[in-house]
Length: 377
Image (cartoon, rainbow, N blue to C red; front, side, top):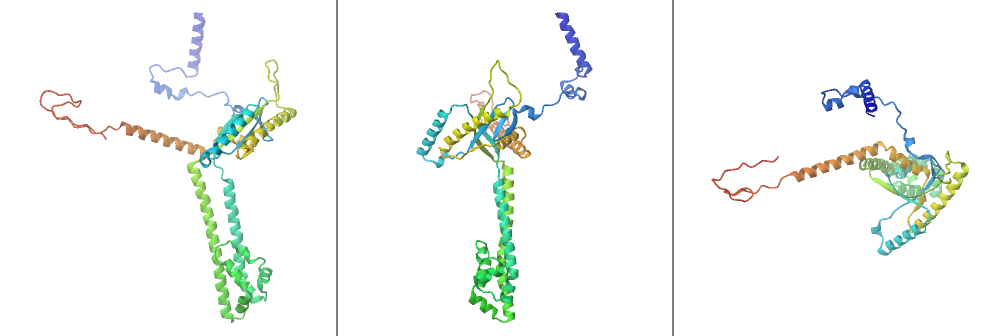
């Protein structure tokens, strides 16, 4: 037994010496730790992230795990209880209790945290800018053709305006500036007849003033478009800086179509028939949960497999923005702890010591000796 242990010890020592891992005699610990010769090249491959995740496939709003378990989820939104009365809160709690007691299958309550998704908000801003651009082009075309309408045609009234410009004066409704007022002036038969009857110089001057007045709408529309761009940039920068998270809540259900037994072990990927039966089962589970949540006047929806994969992807591979925000919050927390520890370590004011007494208050004998006070920085 002892000779076997010695052989193992000698073999281990030989392996250490062969790999330059044997500690140098008399070298400090730090030098041994920082010794470049001790670096060992890892021969085995690092496992991929996919090998650490149990998800094998995702389709039809379901996740398929490697053991053929089919997973689905129902997402729902919450509401601030401070906006409800006590009776409403009690009613919602009762409905929630009834929902949990009527379920005859296991569920999991999942809370996910992800950055705010403002894609819909950004899309609305882009759409508004495009609408303002089209309105700006319409007003510019209107001002360019205004003189030709007054001088080169005999059209009159709203119908004549629409026949020449191809739009109704109310097209400018809701736009800033004076474009709408100028358009309706040109639709007034009396005003247009008087304008056409003026001398050429006065008429051209009046037409130029009308065009200049209508162009005020173009200036306002340009300002609106610039404001929308600044608003989008400001909101995006604020969200990235604060990394304000959004919490989402899910009821997660699952079903395995295969028999689980010690004697029976079925391996391999899930078949189409097994997936059909399992997806139908979890779909019925989700329907029951969704009905119960909607009874509490809370928005509920069937989570898609893309939503679930996004949560898994964000958990294993956080974005650079999330990592920066996380490191910033950790740095702020560490700074707060250091400031609090420094404040707690600061001594209070030193009370004066009376002559003939010790700092603790006990009398002492002999002449009073001046004690230098310690200065804290």
